[in-house]
Image 1 (cartoon, one colour):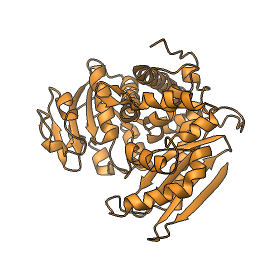
Image 2: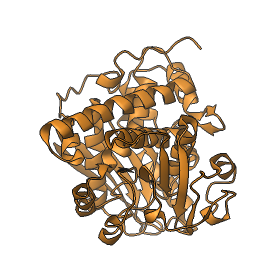
Image 3: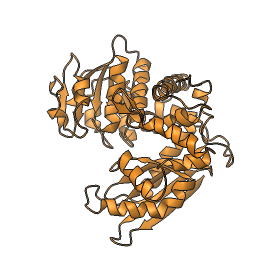
Length: 388
């Protein structure tokens, strides 16, 4: 395994930044860009490790990466510092590093900085590594920007996969009847999950963020909530619910799409669900995971629940023909169903927790520096996009 950290020091403000690579040497490495006070090389390396595991679970020829700036994302200097960070990373972005948004950054914001250094996308390295010409790459990237029921694929993909990870967890917990869901968070990840759950026919009975929780057994008005601007506090949204304590709301499934360490051991002792899916990086400590599993709760760890960004790149760039926007989401749903079926079967057969089962599925494979990054996922080998 290679462990490589590239360090940046902003020449104007002295702000430190880093790009961490982890995993065997491959043509491409993928992971988000985070802006947060206190970020350091060690934290980003740990997160890059998680990215590497996600790629291995999916059977992709992609290494892990993570970049970030030690900076308050509300700083008035953020834009200028990010611009210089991108200039510093330009060669990596052009040849090896496939960037995505993370805490403190947004898709459009990062792409604006990529354009400022002469790159058409923060995903430009995929063009190089996947050996695509400019038109082929542009065609597929346009799919990410295309809306599906009001939200672009880029905003839906991670939450869509998380929702189907949760659906698989609920099935493993033998939940029957219409699925009921409690959702922590209502940022981009959670909004994408809420959209997918609504389409699936699940009843979202509670949603909470740092401002409060609303709940109703009849199900919240998810379309109305999604119709309001992102960032609106949950209690101020037109939900049709009443104030509640999220972790005590009865439901089949709890989806964690909010901050790290989202649940304390005391909260885990009284959570009222048989299944939990974690989408946020480090959303649960391993201690809390074990506590939940001792209570019989099925827990899907963050590197599975949060695998949607990586999986969507396989769905988009793996097939010979370019898929339509809805086909990307449908392929993601199918991939997650099959992955969760393998994961829960491995857990049952080997009598181990889902985290251990997932790590067993994460085969290191053979690192081939000349092989294409995408197109080898066993869960999408027969995915052939139909004519649009």
